[in-house]
Image 1 (cartoon, each protein chain N blue to C red):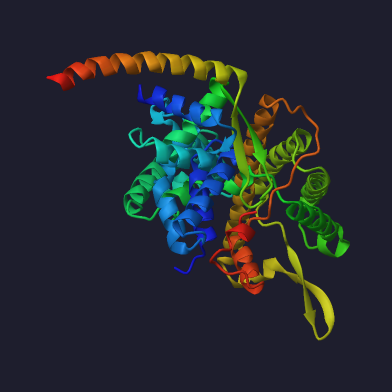
Image 2 (cartoon, each protein chain N blue to C red; image 1 turned 180 degrees about the horizontal axis):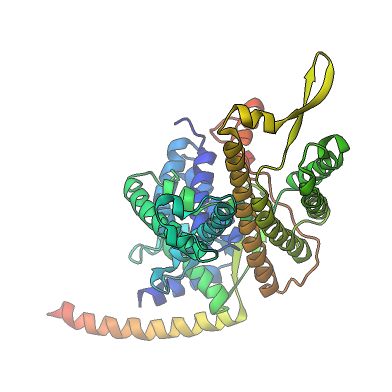
Length: 362
Length: 106
């Protein structure tokens, strides 16, 4: 528990963010300034861990603070407004998970029939059934987590919020560095996938799919370039949404293929030659099933993150439209969020806790 | 009524000049103890007075980039509202004084 005061404040604000509407950066900035000044006032001009904790405690529970700041005090349907946003998020993510799992499981030959429910194997009925199953399971898990989380400190993110806040970082514009990395790595990955030495490792029937992947990766790189040059605007977000939708569609195909690599390069006595995975499968029985499982998992993760990106891009476009921003403008970039890195960089630069609020909150 | 009094107190503070959230909270908590005007009450009210009732407008000051401050000031509508609310408050206050004066006298 050797956290610096500004880390405590940032952690608390991250918790508040979960319960605020998406376009709440101004509110969070105002709260951050208030907390810093309050902590400085308590610490008689100096911000310490203790003064930061006291300032945070005066704000109270993040849920209540967010609800007070959002100023609604209303209910959305049967649930309090402060829960509507996270509940919406988790339902969307769970539905995406369930759909991806359903599609993947169907095509790779797993189904509920293996759990003794043969009547549920018929496609596409298994998808809504799995949605119901996972949402039901999530409700039970969330109930248990809420019970276990009830005594945590205001700065300590609860397990439940960890789940509810899936991808909250995505709500802030991506950093210029992240966008540039996306561009560079996208191009490098596309070039690797186009190399004849790599393509020959794949099942020939898979090559048209591989070409589609290359196109999506290149378009993703272009999207990174646009975000890096022009920041976040509606055209870039639309491109992101279209690419996410295309990736989800591609995932449906990928899930049908199973593990696509049939041979790998091996070096023996200085000579490169192919090693056929089918030889390995005949030696180790479970290996093919394991590779297919890994493949289904990779496809599942890609489908989920793409679903999440599609939803968020859609929400952001509508938010910017409401704000009258139109389609194209020179947008802003977020800061790179990586708590561990920022912590280490502060330590390496000798920036210590007390009185250091100024340097850390920018 | 408490909410009305809190809104009036905020408008009165801003009548002295533009101020930012923390400053308003501090001034109010020092001056108006009965209403217990802390951040949880003041910020939502500031939002409502600005966004819904258009009695305030705001501007960010990034002079200290580590602690950006959102300065609130009265709009012309806000000035009119303050005048009207002050008159209403004066009437209410004098009437209450009369009633309470009789209670005190017993």
